[in-house]
Length: 226
Image 1 (cartoon, rainbow, N blue to C red):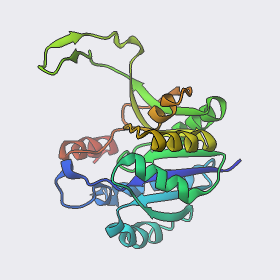
Image 2 (cartoon, rainbow, N blue to C red):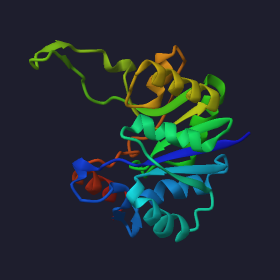
Image 3 (tube, helix red, strand yellow):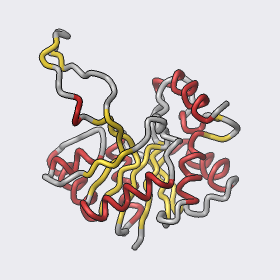
Image 4 (cartoon, helix red, strand yellow):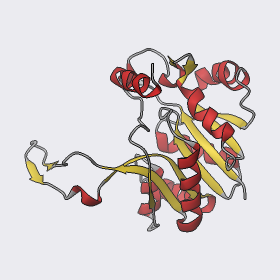
């Protein structure tokens, strides 16, 4: 069975305000992108990685990260699209063929090989799976005026993370249908849901944080232990 990963590092990083792609920022002596690549490099179930970046940083990523640290599983570096969804699509097109595709945000550096293996196994059984964690906070829905309309029961509510894994044909079909219908979503599981597919939730980890703002860098450093 061939399992490929699409690793996303093509965002604009506007909310970080650092003037560079946040996955190139250094934490504990390594670029943030290094951490995800290192996990995939060491994970026995991942056969190859397609890295999706901004066009203007592609060569820097290749030389300063992929080649410098010897990440041999990186098969291709491709340019991202204007939205995350289109970046994933570009990564899929570069894969060509696989049994399972793992999609991960390069801004989540603290994924583990164990959660990657678990989400792959779930995707094999269900076609689509994602890691996530149960919500800790009460959630309220509001109208356009900011007035609360309801308080959903958080018992069955999860905060979704990545990695997410899919049988290749399932994800490819979901992207093709979304493109044909002009449907967009903030994660790939929603594309599968849109075409009536099943998504299996796999327990992630609260430390699997996404780095978006400067405060998240402080959290990441604390979790790493520096």
